[in-house]
Length: 124
Image (tube, rainbow, N blue to C red; front, side, top):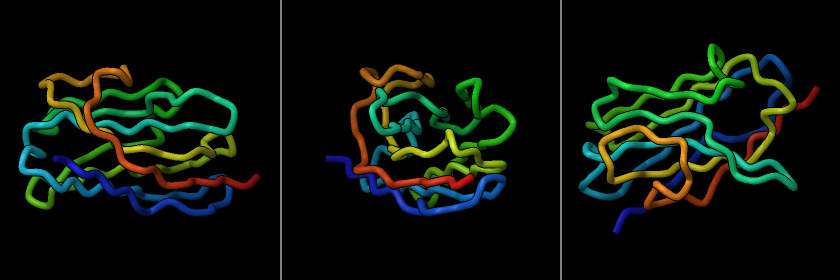
């Protein structure tokens, strides 16, 4: 059974930065595609970024391109989301997800495991 635990959320002013981390407990991390999603109050959970098992392929939603960077350290079973130039509209609960498939995906229903989420609040 895979457990995902996010950390690194918090309150930051617009223009600031945060780095989210997600620790993966299972033995399959190095073969899992990993993704980050977010959910703002009253909205559906949306895709943010994904990274292939090797780290060689990444995929971002258009609204975060050039500001967010997803990366992974397979030796530490951890995936990261570096968030720069944060905007108030980035405020949401951010979720880490793991997918057994080999390819990156933006579809929620293609991810098999989810973390509990970490709150990110960006003040204007």
